[in-house]
Length: 590
Image (cartoon, rainbow, N blue to C red; front, side, top):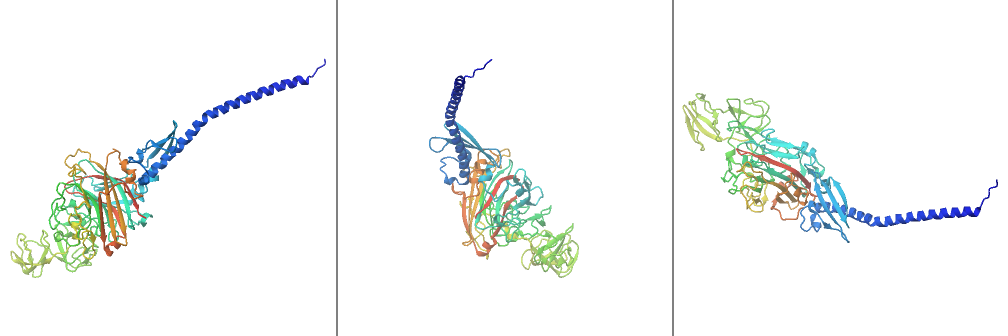
């Protein structure tokens, strides 16, 4: 068989196959091109929506950092940046903040009906700088350690919850909690920080249901004469708020001083200043602020107010008590101490720092037994002090036996009193180891320096009730901080901000404070905490301060403030309270 090959036929078949393939490919290309042409606008709109969403993130960060640089209209927080027009040709974004600190920021960008979402975790880390803040659990766990008259029952630091709780519902308690950590910011060492040009601070607080008194302070104290162990207070005077007073703790009978909480009886030394949040009205206004109710508070007003340190004049009515003997303690001449039970009283005739041996051993000081005892022979020159302190001691001027009961002691210079067969003669004032001048530190009207602090006279700026230093809610002055009349009322939550601008050369301190009511129902007052008001990285200028005062210190006081400590003080008397502080943040001015 012969096979015939026809090259022309084969070529025609190949040509047809090739043309068919080209047609198919061409159709596919056309389909692809058509699909691409249809999908391109969507992709472009999606890309633009994504970029707009990113712009929303950046805008929210910028708004919280400095709202004054944005045309925000009526918006009050980054959480309220919604339906903002963007660019040409339309497009909007809206932002939502959710979760708990450090928060999640979600921005939705929309362009020509296409939406894209961008999420930023840890939003707070981007926008709210704070050199020291409660969001760092290490700051709370080791940086704030309470000093308390009732250990574990006055102040509670809770790193897990991010709070410091002041008061604990206990009567006749007082204490302080200072920052005592280390930070490269402001060269903070054991809580003592460089004051430099000042600082900005922010926190949220709320009094618990049933709180009735006395209140608390946020205090700034000099680092030259104070430490993280410094504290004021007096178990018999809750109105001192542990800011004033020498930190004395009385025995169970409240007749003698058992100890000083600060170990020295110094209290908190000037210069210093604080803002007090006072919910108990102490309207009494005696010349010597020695008894309860002696703060000169305006009638029927809870208040936020600046307090300084009154003056450094000793207040004699706070210097008559006897103190339980302690080793290594400084006792001025004629100080009276007690030991044992029943109590034996000793008076030091020379003064100085005590040794390790109890009186009457001459361990650093000379002590003489000055106890009055009934039916006891006394010789000429013997000395005694009244069992109930009156600030004087007496010499035996006529020897004999004491009577069955203690005499009514006279108090005039050179006076005498008969005690059965003994004649007692006024001999002098007893000494006192505490710092009684601290008892007017938060008394309104105290201080004689107007706006000045004078280390020569000891006078501080006046604790005035003028509007630059004192605020109450005019619409509800008696219960605006805490409803002390109704224990079932949930008290308002407040956001507080303080800025201090220090001029080390002019020696001026401008102290600005704001307080705002939290109405958003969030635990941390998000409406202010994650907005410009809570941003301590910049000055706040959106509205005028609630309090705004400038003081001037002399060179000595100003130098003492080159370093400072900060924290809270709290005290109660018969009335009790709990006040929770959260979301604290502080930034030091460059």
